Image (cartoon, rainbow, N blue to C red; front, side):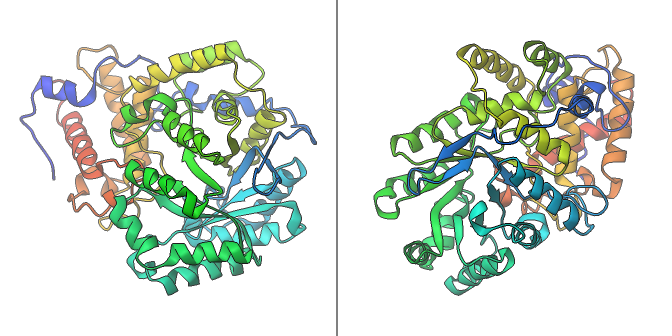
Amino acid sequence: MGKNNNINRRRFLKLLGAGSVVTAATFSGCKPKAMEAPEEEYKHQVEPPKGKMTYRRNPKTNEDVSLLGYGMMRLPTTDGAAARESDAPIDQEQVNRLVDYAIEHGVNYFDTSPAYCKGMSEHATGIALSRHPRNSYYIATKLSNFSEDTWSKQASIEMFNNSLKELQVDYIDYYLLHNIGMGGMEFFETRYENNGILDWLVEQRKAGRIRNLGFSYHGDIEVFDYLLSMHDEYHWDFVQIELNYLDWHYADEINPRNVDAEYLYGELQKRGIPSVIMEPLLGGRLSNVPQYIAARMKGRDPEHSVASWAFRYAGSPEGVLTVLSGMTYMEHLKDNLLSYSPLRPVSEDDKSFLEQVAKELVNMETIPCNDCKYCMPCPYGVDIPGIFVHYNKCKNAGSLPVDPEQEDYARYRREYLIGLDRSVPRIRQANHCIACGQCKPHCPQNIDIPRELHQIDMYVERLKQSREL
């Protein structure tokens, strides 16, 4: 499928993009030691202080919300992996420990969804939080009515009521219309307006079953602008947007259909709407930057992690209410607590430095996949995010085999192919994509997934067929 044995050298190089920085890589998915730096940092991790969390005031309720919000989308499983990558049951005892530690260190915002962790996140979150006084935490969850069988008003109401049941609460602190913009205006109207569910949610806010009503935005800017134009009618209490130092100015360069965070945040600020931030690490990419960038970051701030730069950046704007992080392991939780206990806002000099980092990362031309897995499962078994993650790791590491004339091409070629087979079983690789397109509407980054898989398939086939062009 998708083989083109006559692809010429110029097309091959254009497909890959020449000019990668050359660094060493291992066989396990082209991940050099530099990419493992965050794990090394945790060996010397200090204990985060208690009572130092930075809070932001909700202007509607006057409640103080922790700047670090716990995203419950990557909960640990009994086999040690995150629930998004494993079929094992959620490790409830570990979830309880993480939640207890977070609350003990000042975290009070917990974000979940009926769609997270294969439908088990709300249940696990409810168990963990119900062990604490209800006034000690705020719960955010979503109307994740993506599938056609949830589009009716009754089905959406049932989803809302089931969230209350799973979370063991009688009201939701922060309720979101989920993934607004995905699928454009027509999809939004089908999910929320034509069925009357948006008006019903406004009624629930008046009744106190919802304390704050907002939406999470991905994709089509027409929908974002439309909802903000309706602010006088709906009175949005908050909006969740993607914001990080790469997306601030370069979101549309990562993906032409994305919108710069500077615009999104600015539009919310004009209306006095607090921002909840998702993807501060851009799917982990801003914690796994190339070695030479990581070294510069550590040189400027040796006491903190590479990831802390991204968290400090996302938390610095005053209009940000909380910054979400999906934390699977205690080391990640502690590191993020250190970033916000208390926050050291990025200086103008820091911003200039991160702007330069962003320019360099944009030039790496990776596939803008955040490994969210909304595209999964593929009906033909293709591991879409696994394929993209492997490609991006090698691209970021500078170990992508691009040109037979490049130094270490043969080694990079071998490492890429071995790493791909170790990361993604052959039966689930890109050559099994039939371009059915079922995945495309579900991608928050609006990636043309079949096209990208086809290009990677051609690339891999070419690497397999010959050591030289």
